[in-house]
Length: 468
Image (cartoon, rainbow, N blue to C red):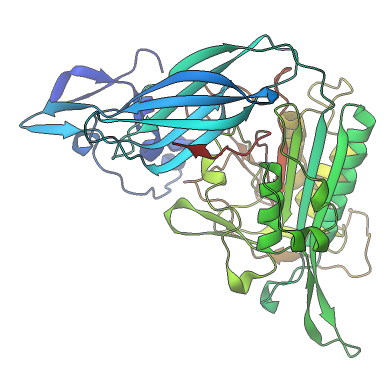
């Protein structure tokens, strides 16, 4: 926010921009939530924070050996110090972020070890991919945080692109559906059908566009029963290890050979390029844990729940959009009469198959934002149609069952809320600063992640691991 600054009493002549405090102090739709009586987490006074910012500079962008479309980016971090009141305060440095055209492409998480003599550190991010979309140049930028999570200023460096051969864009679609879990009480009925429907619908739409090659990987889990109907176990590829292997493959890691043999399509996943679309869909339970961490449940829930780790916490850096089907104290719905979760049905059957999502504007192209907005508007009406019996029956039984799923907590990335049967949804975009561009520009194709009851548009790459 230009022209708005924070001034602390112990440094009255040092105005500080609000964006440097966003990590701990930003809350989306704060006014509306306060007026609604929501209890917000306690925060420290800004005056009590270490406000000395580290200095970050992108010092070098060098071609990667043997790869014209990749570069190594070197970032220098320098600790700073100054006297505040009676004390000499040192910034320290942590959580170095590297962006390409505003999208997170590199992260060194945790404290950064500064040289005790110079107070500096150098980190190199290798094999950062360059776009082949006809751009003449890109901008790399970097920032870090001090020991109290106060952000540094962002340093920017322009880089001219070499002439690159055209690249056939690829759409990687990974759909996860968990009907059966290690713990039977978490079993669902339509999570696996949701994952299949999402994969089939998206693949068909991308094929019709003529733009993408398509790679579809479906990870499913179903309970098994004996001849008298007693549950005997599960058959599953929707495990935590398989989900991580798929995400790792999209980041350029080679998946373990035993998983390649067990998961159809896993061997076809490659490191995603800037022009590619990465579509991740999850149909499963979720849990809002402590410390703002959100968990998606794989089938092997008894062995761990941390499928997503901090993925959703970096939603803003990745330019994600989130379509949340329920609040933290609410549920998303699945129903026998439509044979799917209501959000999946609205997005796929109504939105894409019937082309109703091409509405804002109706121009023959359905953008990510347009698709999600359609889902926001459609689910409440679909829930009413199901309740009144107007929805077409696609299965033999007919009683709605709530899927006991907690939604994303507001400390992660909750950008669109749906409240089926409880009035209109309340949308909002996650934008941590004015520098976060709109998703879906003509030159930067967003990818999409759809989870049970919510959808997330993520960038096309997983952050590169740096070397120092």
